[in-house]
Image 1 (cartoon, one colour):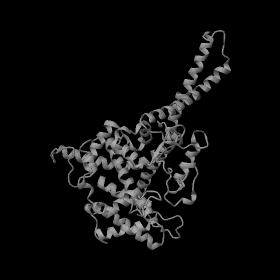
Image 2 (tube, one colour):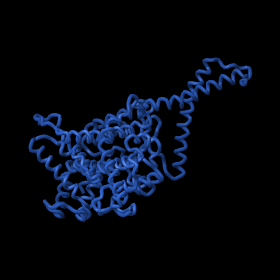
Image 3 (cartoon, helix red, strand yellow):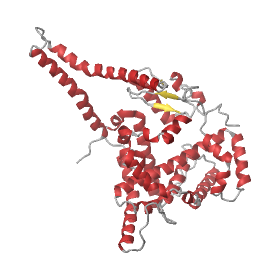
Image 4 (cartoon, one colour):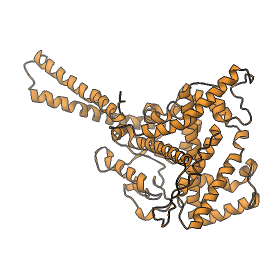
Length: 460
């Protein structure tokens, strides 16, 4: 039996939500007219039909106006003000949604320079860091189809949302619905007690003793550097973002599961204008690695698009759930690892090969999946949790490294000073350790500030 696609499900829901209330209102008007409730007046059919058609738009407009007034009242109550609205030229700001999608697909940092100020796009600044929110206004409201989206770059807002008042900023049912086909009920797609449960499962694994073990990262970093040198000798450009995605995917998978995807060994893509591209036959293992890396990136792209479209995202997936095929590949990689870990843990417990230990205990050399199977044997819970952590471990590091390189290429003075600190503290050949990273203050500043727009004093 074929599963109902997200688009079809939304259409059925909207039919029940929109058509039935209008039909009921028309039926009510007809009954009132026929029963003489309106006195000697009888409503003509055309007026009943018109009333039914206009019923929901009028109710919707009333709700929108009421919500806007209520937001202002609530903001004034706390001594604040609503975020500045950015409105487009079409009903429901469809033009802004279209522009955002185009910028997301083909734009560069800097093209947002004036978008949230006057809805224009500055193609001349496509290579620069600029304040795409607007000077002096760190938060804006971008309402798409009358659904508010608050965008903020103010550090205090971020601190409140992610730290000091985290429990008050739930992901909510809409977000969870968008992400469920990929994230399931993992730590990044739950709220409340369920979120606390998932967090308690993984938190003991990420201690200082674990994260300062650089052997895995050093090994995959050397592989990445080798690929860079080989590509440079061939005279071709490198897609640094793709390289960092592969590096972090390999590192994260080995760190978390004890099995590396080995997407780096499958080779990195050549630029579209490369004159000579080797036609070496790819090995089955390399093909499997490339397929998994592509599917892993694709599912994240899909859920990011869903978030961009807001509540109408299912209409872009009327004929199929676009995450279904790539998730089949992702699960085909994860499920055997989980199955083996569960069987291994069951064998250990059955034969009494290991003493019972507390849930917070993590043994030397134990991977995340080894730790999780001691807490749960549910394959769905284990898959959701490992996939959530894998996405977080890969994306955060890959984004940081990619944008840091982008920033360093634009600010040579920062690059020179950072290189000077690294050479003074670590030297040209020694591998840095946890204490080295902690003591390199300028390195920390660069990582924290690499994404700051121009005129931010980054050169200082």
